[in-house]
Length: 236
Image (cartoon, rainbow, N blue to C red):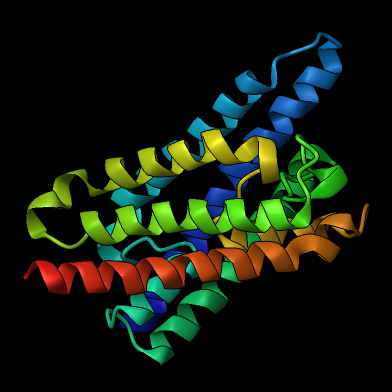
């Protein structure tokens, strides 16, 4: 029953992340197109970055005491490597997160009346900066490394508990500010996969590129966990 509650929390949290994070990206871009007025990329980047950051804050203080509010397979992978969860828990969390992301993306399709865009990630022509595959892979690894390192650090001590959600949310905002022009910022395989699957009904591009936004965040998370484990043991 406890595992079931954690899975439900992860499902809900990831769905909410996609709805408000990816949904804000779709809404911002749709509004820009509708008013036909040039808007600086920096402005829409900030709007999207704060949407993702704020939804993490909201979910951290809502379901954090139930499941830890991973709502991201990369976070769960780092926790697995760090010995903070076992393989069974990891599998259950990832399935719940992916299903939540798909459900969130499906709700966006209903809300916007279209499966176009959905806040998907991409490289090449799908990148605002036209960044190539190698550049985007590196960006996602670095962004995820920073994000996961912050999570591992702020969750390592009980005295940080009251500010954990704020720190994680602001860190996600930070990595989005840098990453949105390159890839739309993923750092979360579920967040990328859900919208890409639903977007495939309109355009196959995001789904064909989604492998990068699954692999790169996991690589970044793995490196972050190994480095943090080494540094924290050395500090003791």
